[in-house]
Length: 246
Image (cartoon, rainbow, N blue to C red; front, side, top):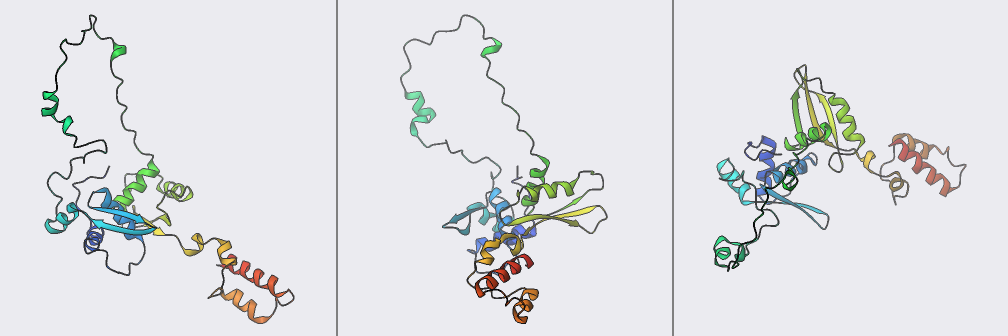
């Protein structure tokens, strides 16, 4: 669970300020600001919407308070009312006290309650699998987490491989693991997938126009070595080679 009293890191604060300004046009280096926004939403500072497929974020009163004072508002750690909470006046203590009571009390049990009558214990929340816990830690850190593994023999490389293989990262992203400054420090970062990983081959083959051919395919197009085929076959063959090359 995200700690609601943990100060924001510089990247989270920068993103919160941008959202507080109404998300003005800005050239972000990548889309990791959306991952940072998820962490801010988990802290109940903003709300994210995707109406009509368009990403948008709005700041909440708690977020404005943080920008003004540098701290969360009083009582922010308290759990907000659940979806079942209502303002029904009939549920207030005064309303319940004014309701007529039955004339005779309910019959009492003449035998003590047995163990079978006791309510079942509430199961303790299970810890997350290590892969999901690592991914959650990275998201909570704003998309980049540095961890010292001096006394930690965890197979983080295997976790990262499993996360990417199962496509557990946010849509269009993958988890990258690289060395940090220290000898046993590692950086875990969410990065956008390259275009060649996200564009279906069929979209390349059937695209109305290819603006920039792969250099090898461009040379093949210009030297006339593929003219033995008909124009339709030649064009499709070159597009398939271009998609494989890219």
